[in-house]
Image (spheres, rainbow over the protein chains, first blue to last red):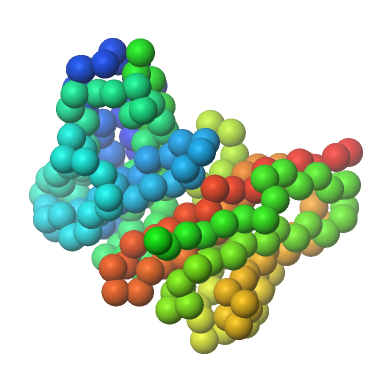
Length: 113
Length: 112
């Protein structure tokens, strides 16, 4: 069974631009969560989607948004990029519930210049 | 606010020795915990989990111990191997909100 895939793996953007990241969960998994990972803050929860609905949300500004499609694939968007948005963005999928084991993808490394 | 912290940012051990990585959490109501391993350039990999109704759980070469009294859990790796070199971090599930709170990680270095 294929694991969680994320595209692109690397991105370089400039301040003010926007970016869209994509995540394909493990086949059969319906929950997709997004995290931001930085050296100083560790993994910070962004949001979780289940059956095309945002089921949970972290403490990030509205510039961070996401969506989920009927095939469980998910995208997250960051608008008006700031230097502090430079991070590794990780996607994790699980079967149904938040307490199901989360399987992570390799991440998208975003650099904002 | 909620926090999960690891005691050491870096841990160096000799190949073949046992490793112990510690983690403290702040919310006494947390009832589910996971240890992850993250190798360079990869996403976190699930190692082992434990629920609050247990004190100990064993996997292949790994053991997680949970001390709810002092809100502390540890990951023990037996006979540490070079392939164990990675960053390890724990996650605590916040009850009610169902959000995971992650620690910042301990880098394990295995010395030959």
